[in-house]
Image (cartoon, rainbow, N blue to C red; front, side, top):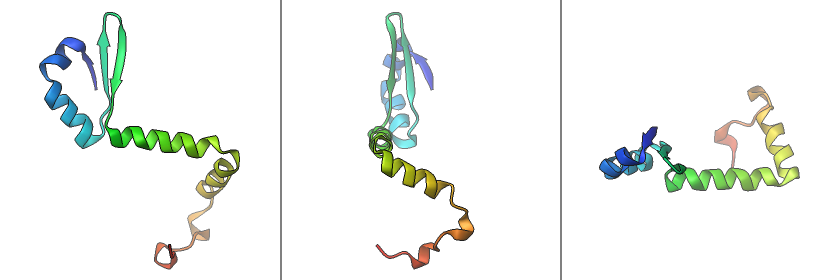
Length: 81
């Protein structure tokens, strides 16, 4: 969602609630620049993705897993944790 700082000030509670409940990123424009507000859940997800992607070996395994045909995967019911 894109909004101005003035509109954000008027609707801060509703907009923050929307960001938190629906993981909707808010883009707020001001005369001096722009800001982004997102839920903590979305932020933590981005950090986790960056951490996983920063390990070259793990990144290679993740890409290989993503490219594995579903027919070659183990059914979820057979996975033990």
